Image 1 (cartoon, one colour):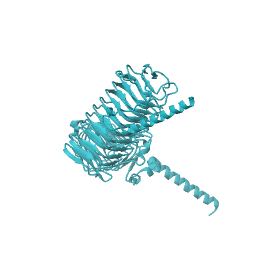
Image 2 (cartoon, helix red, strand yellow; image 1 turned 90 degrees about the vertical axis):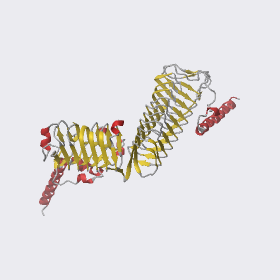
Image 3 (cartoon, one colour; image 1 turned 45 degrees about the vertical axis):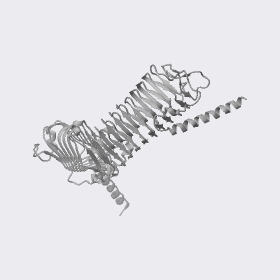
Length: 561
């Protein structure tokens, strides 16, 4: 072959190759670049049976007819949207349907988009979604948008035999009635951890007459947010995650669940039930309990989910000896009364807190280790009458954060090395007593009382080498009203490692507060003050400080001789 003909042949091949690539990319640009991220490679298995489109937007009956291949729009013969390949390049929705008055089915479509299928405000329409493949790639949109199927304010919904791989939520149902979700495979996208979130397989919000059965998940499991009345109409049956059953226990009494055969446990309206010895990984909520009384959650290990354990709208709950590690937050007690959280380890919560006590009353939080929660707090609270005793809150963003609390007692805790917001931050609170705690080398103020605080008492604490800001002069700050930095009856204050020879210790902040009765030595807890177990970690730390302080004074004294 002559060189000129050879060159012409090569150029022709390259041009044809480029043409083919451009045509395929126009059909499915996202798939060609990102298909390697999918666990479900069936999404990329195109045939000529499919109709390629970028999106299906239906806001009228006329739109519905234009995208349907068969049917008349009745319940017996719904319009059928089928055999589409939908890539959603550069748009939000793959399929969006609202404002129609005809019944319809979506089946046998292959979808790659940000939102997969979104259906809104169709309360009188029969909706069937079956045998579709749905996947997502894009991570640059708000995380709540990254949902496989989202349905809001609809009725009479059947979602079955779909294969979904999603970034945030697989199936999300809100304010809807008469819902059947069955025989779906719902997986969290590979690499989802890089999005800084956790995956929820199926989410039900304030929906009635829902049946969720025979679905399979690789992570996430099931999330439910509903009222007591709606939960009475919920059926969860035969769902599995990674081959293990999702345990649902409703309306049962006097039961112990100790067999480690579950991937997630959900309790509703139970009395005197114990959940123990479970091991959960990558569940949105490892243990999820609501409207229960006298229940115990003990010796469970929960890792790499959104929340290790969420207990809501319950009373007389005991949470003990659990390990919650590498979740977004460890333990959430929400709207509960007369409960106890003790002897738990809540480590490495990525964005919120080790323990959250929210809108609860009379909670005892004791002997917990809430440490290394780098982007959150060791303990966060907006309840009333909470008592914190002998907890370790170290190496967090902030040790303990209180918001809108009253009559809380923080006693005998070790709060150290919290690197950004310091030891204890009280945003809004009244009648908070902080005593016999060790504050050691926190990266911000040891205690901050914001402008919304009043009538708090801080006494018998040891403040040791906490960071003093460049524009400050103290290890603590007070912006509140009528807060005491000493006991008003015994006239005993706190130990401050930087006090020197000053007679009183000035507290930074607009309140103009002082500790008028500072102590010369670190505080040692007297035996009669031990309300519970002997606080060995605190005692060991305090004795070490006492010895070092004595040595320092001896050295200084010898130098002056």
